[in-house]
Image (tube, rainbow over all chains, first blue to last red):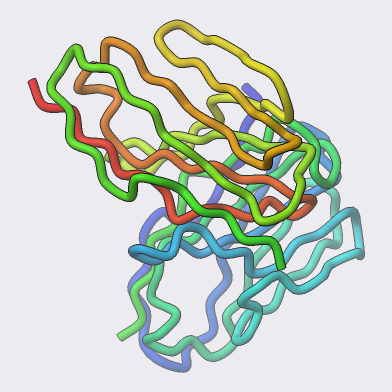
Length: 113
Length: 105
């Protein structure tokens, strides 16, 4: 089944403790992206990647890092999480940048206390 | 950057009613898509509609690219249609704030 897989689904952590949210897709998509969703703000893009080793900042990149060492994986790294990063996070992918069939993972609900 | 506005922000319907959701873009986009986020948070791609009209069951969408807007029509609404509807477009998929739809039995 074609899908985008995120892990974990839920995570509660403490301020300053480094964490990684994994994202993997099995559709051979070149384009991958991370969003955060906050009430009333829709989805805001954190980082995106157009291909292996090609990443760029979205609208809200502060406090986040990403890497794209393999085509299928695009992990999101919070090196020193803070409470204002408490949010619902989504990974998404598409065949190419701006192409049809934008597919989302199931989301990761992160709480930083 | 490009701005995406959706209206109305909230919509409450009785089961069986029809509705129209609107999405306006501040600049032209060539890859407009509509998504439904169900009450469990899952985001489902409904339509890829850069221009013209498409239909899928009780849902249809129309995009007038020259005027930078798109409409999502829901006919004979059901409780399972509840959730948040988002439109998005542009190379890096800019999203609107969404329309929260509640369908009451």
